[in-house]
Image (cartoon, rainbow, N blue to C red; front, side, top):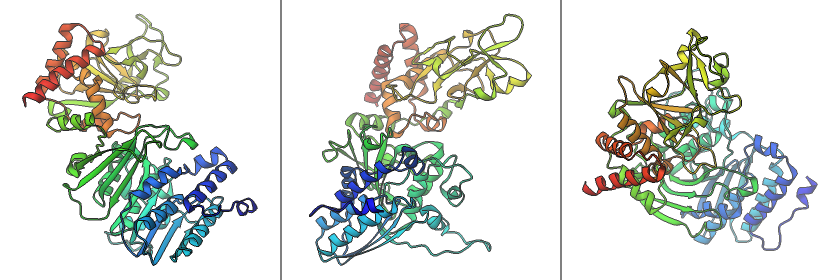
Length: 532
């Protein structure tokens, strides 16, 4: 505690700058492991000021919630911004949560200075700092639209906040975690705690209250966040979104390689025609000179769709591609084409996987891994340590194998060094003399369930997925390295005759290079778009 007492504000120092200094000092006192366990990524001052600038509230008395407050830099920046907007304030009430007991003295120090700073301006500031878990204390609001069972505790929760501002913790939760158990209304698959913070916060807002969060972008798509998106986008109206084009710059002090997004939403009636501001910057240096686009709410999220994927175009190119794609009416299932994830989970199938071919002694099928799949080409065999190139065909492995027919193999993950998220290779049944093939779990495969994909369909679809056009389209809604089957099922495609035309042109040219693929895709798609 003595160390904290020795850190005092400078003369006329802004509360946000003092909170930032406290945060820097604190991070020097604890281990990286401690910060990781607690999901702590402290907000740099420019980003705190950006979040604060999203607030447009105009009231003389305001009630603020800062869940997971850290050293309260977001609250401090928000209050400073509100005072710039409006000089007449009577009372500011704050409720804050911080369950890291080592950090709470720092939080208190920052809030006491903020209180003194506001008192000098004639403004009353009251704060309550909770050391309880925010999720466990407030998750009951998720159930407010249903009657409690006889065995449930009824609990009063502090609600009706005018502003909720947060940089929540980021980490995955196990399915048996108490916070997951009490937040089932937000959970599908393995949840990340930040989305639970967002969902609960949305329910704690007053009517016309403002929610301002900085989080990973991963909630925008994917099956793990499907239930959350259904809940969140039907509870609040998106008003502003800011994206950072650099993964490294946002939380550079903590070496975070995460695509982040600032989102502002309002608790009001959902309006599909409401304008949403989408801005972007490369990182922190150009944070207040962003590129800005406006879209109708329905253009970036279709609330009538199953997945409710959030599309976030940030450039003229991305906007024009999203506009083009919106004219397409088909998804893969309309062509009787499906996508599945490779069934071979390597560590569970070790008894069947081997690296050497045995002629006549055992029956073997080729096994395709992520490293075998490259743009427009399948590299197999390709020796890699502990990645056997064959899988045995026997009674115990039959459930892991798929029939040998034409497929498109697509990587489920891209690396941070990959220039593209979508990396696909064609596979033709004459590639191997086997009734079956094996596809490892980090690879998706696209196929026609009842029948065969024709050669022109395989090449055409593969070309589209590998093209610059589709990679840009995919990155408009995908903010991580995962390429899930769920997202691909929702993606729109041009008519099947266009896909076949692309495939035939590439086959006839006998040039599978990406330069030729992009030239043919762009030529046919742009011509089709122009004619229509």
